[in-house]
Length: 96
Picture 1 (tube, rainbow, N blue to C red):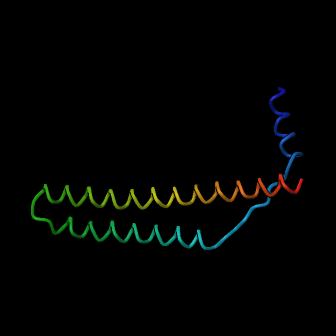
Picture 2 (tube, rainbow, N blue to C red):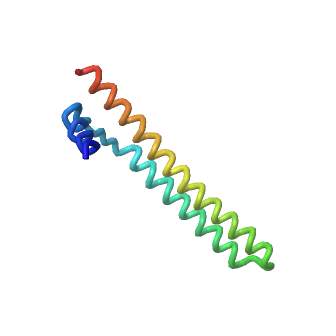
Picture 3 (cartoon, helix red, strand yellow):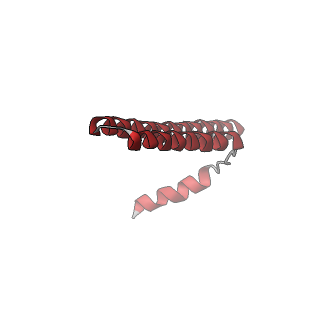
């Protein structure tokens, strides 16, 4: 089981320090709340629609707004984490 030795080597090479910034967390929460509010607002229009075609169209619009909000939120979080991790790694490499 030599592949388990890789984990021991990684632990001894570098310890990365995490960076916490409350602004991206607040932005993430705001995007999630806005997407949820928009989807719920659209669902109320779906109930008031006269035909089944209009209901399907409003349901699709609500799904797109909620899915788009989740997608943007996840993309923002992942991109921010990748940039912060890269900055920490570069800082550790320069310090070594």
